[in-house]
Every structure is written in structure tokens, then in C-alpha cells.
Image (cartoon, rainbow, N blue to C red; front, side, top):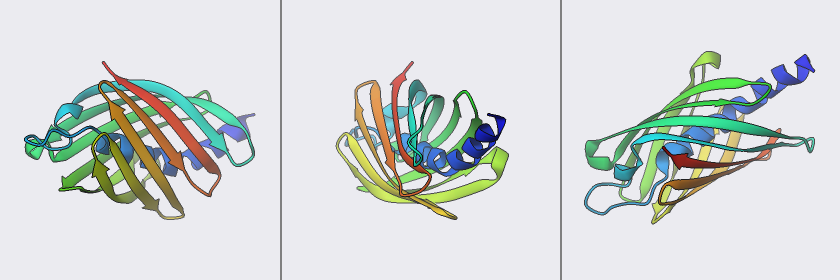
Length: 166
């Protein structure tokens, strides 16, 4: 099964980068303090990755968010692992009005990409892309809980994660 682990490593780079961007981007906004103002701190959670071959695998994640520029800028680090892989991501995101844009990188595999999307109260919808990968991502935030959904047409069909602050 060692071969499956190396395949999973390659398959997860892009969806996880997309996930990182969504996680940094999503939060309910406070009009006077920017859409990321209440997002600072540490978050953790679990979820499921569904592959095109029908298999599923649980994932565990920890994220740290640093908010700047009056709540409109966000820097994030994300570490995720399952039984067969591990990765480290970093991201920079900026909100301008209801628009969100940013960059991400997965340092151990030297992969990077971009995102663009819209912020609405308690939800963000983003299109994420990198070389050979594109996905739609939605994040819904309520209090200290987030749900993240990623869907693509590639090897990784769906990613679903729930995070809590603390």
C-alpha cells in the first residue's frame, strides 16, 4: 500500500492548497473591521477526502491565521495529515469590498496557485486554480465553526472539512 500513499500525496497538493485559501478567506464580516477581523487565532478539525475511484480518507488539519490591514488582509499556515500523507501550506489573501483574491504555496512540493471569488455574510465562494488543477470552493462560517467544501473534476472529487476555533 506504500504506492497508494505516494499517489495520495500527489493528488492532495492542489485541493489542499485550495482548501487553505478558502479557510483563510472565510468568516462572517464586521462592517467596521473588515471581513477577516474575527478570524485570527488557531483552528483545528477533521473531514473527508473523496477520490474519483470511489475511495475516501479521513483528514486532520490545524490552521493559524494572522489578520492585518484592518481586517482585510490574512496570512495563514495550514498543516494537514491523514494516514498516508502530510503537507504544509501558507497563504496570503486580501479582501477588497466583496471581492477576495490571493496566492498560496505548498512548500514541501514547491506548488503554488491563485484564487478569486466573492464574500457574502457568513459565506465565501471561490474559484481556485494552479497548474493542472481547478476547483470550486465554498466556506460557511457560524460563530467558532466553519465548514469547507471543495469540488473538482479531477482525481480529488470532494473535500469536506469542519473546523473549530481553539
